[in-house]
Length: 236
Length: 315
Image (cartoon, rainbow over all chains, first blue to last red; front, side, top):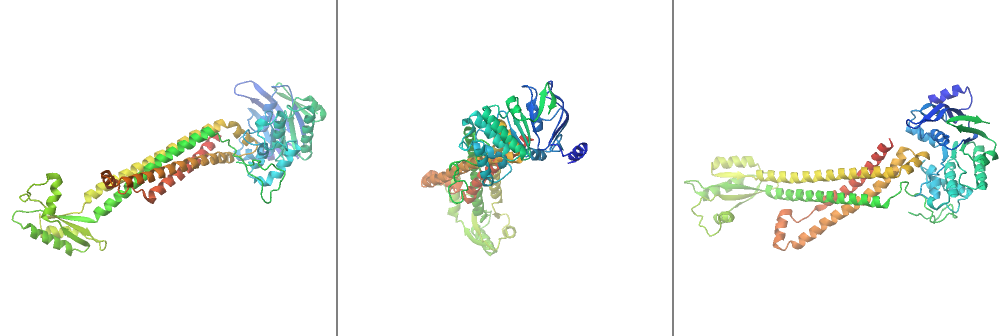
């Protein structure tokens, strides 16, 4: 909590950032730095695209926000909490406030679509009857109402993507991270999914969408965080 | 696995009735699971056999001890210039007058000589040999006999002629043997349970490595280490319960079968020997209870070890 106080004092009264990076550097092992001196701030209820060529470090940046890797140098704060030396209990608490759509979906193949989407609520220890209606409603909304009993290996790429998005949204996260969420769908569905993210953003969720789909980025004028050669440039 | 929504109060009638809702989070790899359950069943079976056998030896030894301790013997030796029959009568009188002695039976000369037959053979004239004579005393349940006092009185009345044997040496050897059997049995049961724990730890590490992605996804969707450990524990406890139950049932069936066979063979000459050695080949409720207890402990060990292994793996 002390870290939160520090962040607030730095921002001199401004609302605490959802994510804040200060001079963050990241390298894997002894390799070259994937990210160098990256500093940015994600405000509450904001919407931004994270873009850049393949291999520019988008996925690494998302992994840093997700706290699945730690920075080699610099400070990372998530929901006002500085994450170096964070306890595993606090880490779980922060992750429950995030929703994430992975580029490779990461659905659990032995669980049905319904069970996969319900997973974030199930791991919170909630009874199945308490969330059944919400899960079914969201599944129908993303067009998977007829596929809720199917196992992921039987879903098409687009269906898997929608299931992954539904899983990220079901717990109404404060922060949504999506890695190439429109990569496997036709442009029409891509725009529909973007509308879904915008709806969520209007309800108060901060959204970061990593993409190099300019069609999507041009469809909605939002802040663009452009990564190139490990350095970040913010546009808009 | 499939749960139906039929029944009163199902809020979503449009849901497919066979929709599966709470499948185990850790995938059940059937081949590895069956192998682990089989290993646990075999180990539980072996531990159950050991425990039942140890219990049988302990209870048989207890029966022998009980019957041997019920009796003490006075030995009256012929001495030069002494009237053996008078000495015997005197010793018997002293014994009968002692409180706690229920009954005193004097072995006749012929009976005493018959006792020597296994060693000396039959048809010998033993009248010239100084064959000692025995008085078998049966101890009463109440009051307890003071054997030390009886021994002192016999020594005083018939010095160097009469001696009292309370079978203490035999009882001690019997008890040592029975305790050794029980100790070895407990040791083997403990070893088998340790082996079960190690097998489970190994299997859990394998399952964790094989399900690395599942664990990662669970972490990302907000599961804490305890939740993940519980998911693995539930799966392995189920396997342990299945293996433990099968092993314990097989051990109980083996004892029941051996008991039936022993009872069937009792009419023959071998049956007498088996009965002499094992009593009535009766494991008793304590034996069966210990077999069931081992099954339960094996399942608990499986659950606890898998949980600890997962916690260490995640840490």
